[in-house]
Image (cartoon, rainbow, N blue to C red; front, side):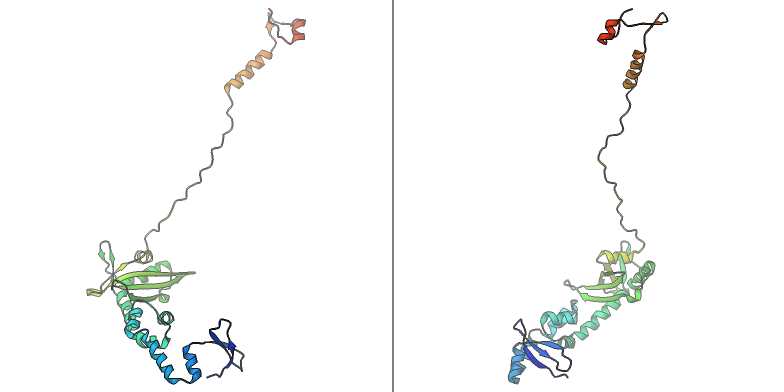
Length: 255
């Protein structure tokens, strides 16, 4: 056990700063009622505080919350009680959860046409093999839901994703049955099911005017223009416009 020296009060005004003289490490110690009683040497008050802390959560409540899915660390942190106290009463419940997860792996998945002849463990192991994933790294767990039924969970990593699948476990004859509760659980029960895909839709492009279509009238008018530009011929001789037509720019209509 290392001896620490008191440096002073922390900035928050709720903690005492202590330091290890040998290593220079600093620690924060909550300035709570227990510390004040210890500083006074009040052993009686320390015992009362211990009893009050333990009475905040009874063993039955600890076991009920662990059975509902909380971990020892989560419960200790949320209740503000030592981890050792939670461990003291949670051990038998943790064994129960582990045993239920093992039993659920021997249950038969419920499908549309009835229970599968294979067990949940066999189906999931096959699905992992199809996907090329390591089934030995997957972790099973179970807890009792609010409705009183057992929920079995499987957790595994695939790449950077943390995946979880859940089933409802109903113990019974021949191992009981399990029913998928989410999409991950359904996918593991049917690894060959084609995933839903969405067909890409081409974005509608705004209407753009196409290239102008040549008009026959234009060609015709051009032909007529060419024909009109062609000097008229009368009796094999070109018609010579009169001088006033040349001056006024008027085509001669004579002849």
